[in-house]
Length: 325
Image (cartoon, rainbow, N blue to C red; front, side, top):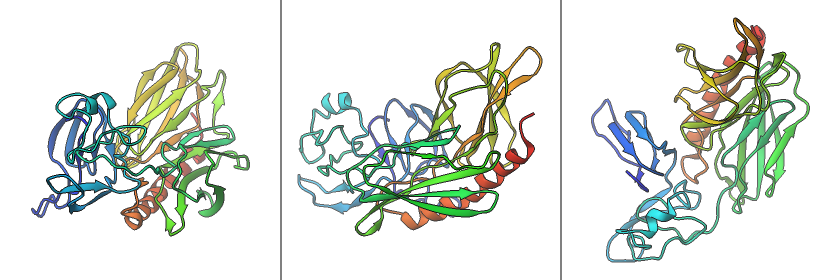
């Protein structure tokens, strides 16, 4: 599949009700899948989340179509080269020229909505805990929620509509904090960002792994970066939040990607010497398939985020208490 949307499908059998796909899907470029729980995806990782599809309607052209609603992940997420080449030929299902915005849309419908909800691609790096995200022009502002896992206290911080970063300069060393960014509009909540967490002051050892960052970007793949590490070997330790087996893999400083299981995972970088670890990074965590910045499914998304925050907080609090080995 390429430049395609799979979403809002219903399986009427009891065991698979509501899941969008089943079996193995081979993806050769950008695609959007609403729910990948019963799929094995190979190739290019898809966007996972709300498609923001309107009902089948006469939106122009000879046939009915599903319009992309404002805030849909599919808007501007397609391949310009694919949209321009045959058989698409630079038009959508209705004959409307594409792209209509800075990028081509996924699927058969090219949206003429120019607005984008800010808050996508939430990134976190440790030290003072620093957050960055993509800007937009639909939101009227943001509310950043910070959860202290030691006290369960939730602190909301209002931010202006043009904000694209925030530095938490007051975290207590050794305590895990989780963050969720909520873009807001005149009618209220527009969606929720990724759920990302960090522990300030947890790194130890010399030389330290440094510049460890993570962004999830509303997909099932985490993008991570490591500026520097130990002199011999750096290992990425992957800790599933459902209690599954902990794994690790050798990495080199730079940018790399890592699948995030649906249950979420914490990632720690070890700088290893010949026989033991000589440095450890702060743990960074992500939750796959939780966040949404579409205008639909807000209540369900917030419920999922709340559940995932509890799981992330419990896991990170355990890491913080144990400390690096």
